[in-house]
Amino acid sequence: MSLGGGGGGQMQELQQQMQAIEQEIESLEEEISEFETEKGEADEAIEAVERLDSGDTVQVPLGGGAYVRAEVADIDEIVVELGGGYAAERDQNGAVESLNRRKDLLDERIAGVQEDIAELEAESDQLEQQAQQMQQQQMQQLQQQMQQQDDGDDE
Image: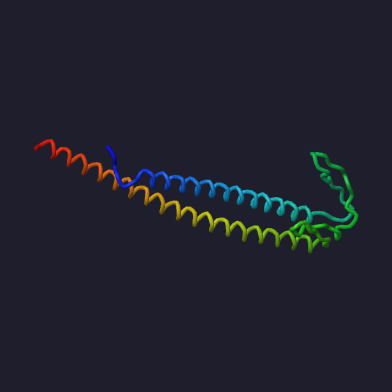
């Protein structure tokens, strides 16, 4: 028994679109998680910069899980990443300001990604409503066909 109208193909297309949206949302949520990690690292850096004084001993990461003890020669010579592969030397207050600006930018990026997620969720909701309407129409068509068959059998 055929439902007619090619509803199966449309339903499959809607499901594929909803799946693609869900994957995009997951990707964006991972992006937010990465931004949150960056913010946490900036917070840790701010806390460290504010606590440090010239002459303090610190452990400096060398990479690969290796560290070396070093003495802070001058707290007003802090190199801060600016983004895009650039860095600049800042004094203690300037370093904190740069890190706070980075956090503000990350907050803006997070807000933008959250807006994108909200738009995708709204689009997914619309597609889900369309799918439900299609299912209802298919059920109505099936009921009508069954009713027509019953009427034909009664004659």
